[in-house]
Image 1 (cartoon, rainbow, N blue to C red):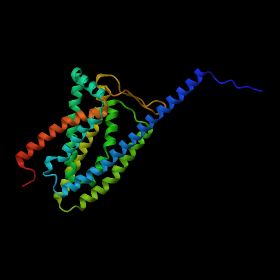
Image 2: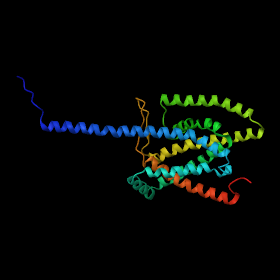
Image 3: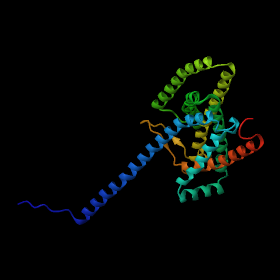
Image 4: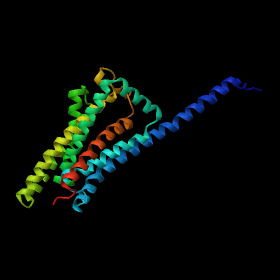
Length: 279
């Protein structure tokens, strides 16, 4: 008769610990993946709904004068509220950086200025052109972001990324013809000139908006101080990036807080001088 010798108890305990540890590490990965997908869906969904909601409010005269740029105030306030997702340890790191790192403070204020300016231009552009034309022009942001990343970050594009930029460019070229027909068919030269000016404003806002992402990358990953950053792509097409100085939600909250205060001062002073609606 052949007897089977059971493994030592130490081996059994080590195997159980290994199984438990591998099982425990799987749910967080699944949670992170699910959270990432939820964020992508929310980002795309709100991006689609935003022009539609602004158009509906504009047609009902709920936004007051166009120069008030009320949607920008709503956007910056939403950014400020993202800070509730940060942890106490994140806020400790932020306070330390604000106290001790003058370069980080300059990067924070400059990024807030660029983001606020781009937001005001994009809001003004959508109020002039309408949601349909705005969405077409806003889709140029990935192209500008890729070009600015190449120029200022030295980041090489993979074949897939370059192909995606090319597809976006071709789509924009195709949409230009439809936009041109809309301009030619619009009633009155005044409306056509307004749409043209609004399109230029939107494109300028898109360039600044893409530049804001590059500035955020520089600040969050420490490019400005010569460290961190991203390397790649490597031979397998992957890009390795240094860990951010602070978490993106806390970064967005800092920017949104400063921008919301500036926009609130602008809106209140403008209403006090010229009123809410045009006379």
